[in-house]
Image 1 (cartoon, rainbow, N blue to C red):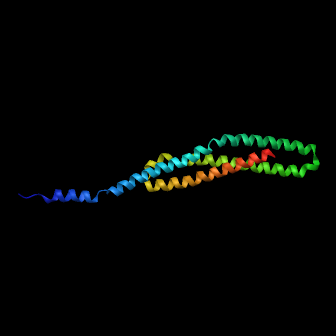
Image 2: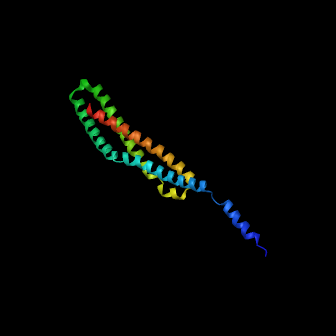
Image 3: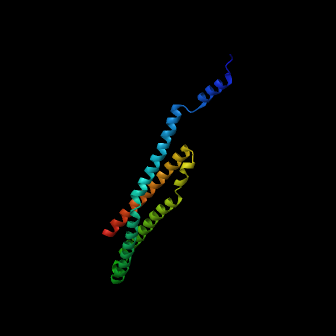
Length: 155
């Protein structure tokens, strides 16, 4: 009796060309890596997002202080130069707060989390690493501008 060699050869070839256990493990690790990176990105987002309402309050407080400085300047012309410097510093801080707020809104608008599942895992990891850098930069600018505003208001 002759045994057909083609089906056996095809079965062996299929097994040999299929993904190895290490390839399967690597794919699982990359998927976990993508999930962890996305969690890391959103952990930073969730940390700084509540500060946006703080930014709005600080901008309102700063603008109130700028109005007060205007009235002080009229009452005390001899202090005009010092008051003008304080007003300029306050305006700069308001601009920094506005910029930090805009950076956060832009990041949220441009983040494409929905397309992560459609990307190859290596591309998803690259995308998330770039997003992590961007959101960390946003965090730094938000924290810096909020700190500057709080210090200015305590003067």
